[in-house]
Length: 245
Image (tube, rainbow, N blue to C red; front, side, top):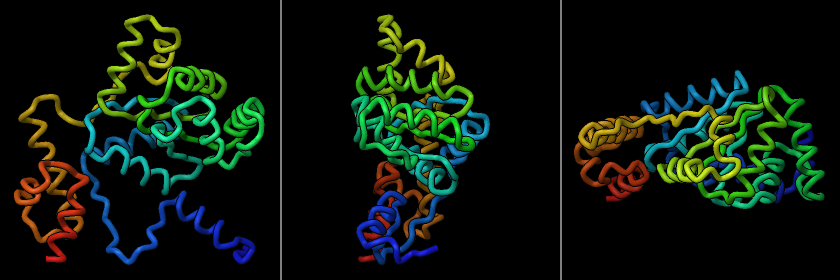
């Protein structure tokens, strides 16, 4: 309860990790789109039952945003951007850091302490975003960690179509470890969007409309879709530009 014990640097670090918005910008409202509901429910299941899953879908539909919202709201859940920690040591040490385990010692000690800690806390969940970016050694280490924490930890791997292509290609080549990784993560690619081009376009229009409405955009949903091309990342920019104008 002694908040003064933390210096400014420590508070800034905590705010960064929790993605606290220190600006005066209007708070962004999360719309519970079909993508949000599907991924959020899957994350709940993985954490509650200590099971694993793979979400492979097109980019810019809200996968990352959903995972970050879930992480903020649920205890013992961490989010890892694998594009920032592509090697085995960087990945495992980042997982340890996010869970509050000492990550600055020898790698073997960090790994063993991390496994021990995961097996002692209640229903941990580790979300691996941009998972297709990690190198081969990191994939093998994820398999090893899954084995060491089986039944104690939920894992959720996310990526765009490139992740699916990478896994399938290496499975077809019978490269050691990939078949086992795919099996351990549920042996099934989850997808939120429809496959057909026309259906996908209608689906994106629905996402754009829901997010625009939640954030009280003065632009019509059709105008917003036209200006963003269906990109969810561009909605916030368009709302701000319209408000300034």
